[in-house]
Image (cartoon, rainbow, N blue to C red; front, side):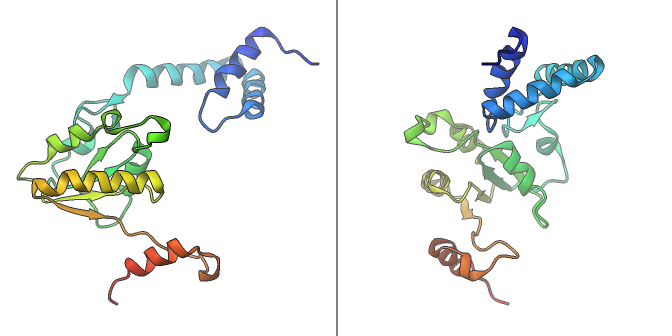
Length: 198
């Protein structure tokens, strides 16, 4: 059996720990890095080091940022009365592209998943509740439309409604360009529930 150098094996093992990277992909990446020039490899290493040294999490919303509070929380042009709650930073980036939304965000840092040992105390739920003041008129729950995301949305709505804030959930349904015949019953039901007047 082929055995690679110990340092290549170490790199492969480290890369295999990344989410979505299996052993084969990690091996391919390790050999790709090995083929890079020293300068390119050191630039990659420096970029990793820099992001770990300079980027942290916003103490207000949980977004990644080089400044605390982040640029969204400090932007005076943002609507201060609407908070969109998402699971992860990548979700906030996607929602920030939505035309017509110019509010604030709150990143939970995950979703409720009892099977994985993730409960309410593992998410930034207390921080969200602390942000609910008289200034906040609406909280939009934009967790992913899967079992854990739905459970998280229901849990949050039960905590938020007694605080006197309007709680809404993003509509779910058919993606643009899809055919009805290929959609499952749950997706079609949600599309029907989320319908609006022309």
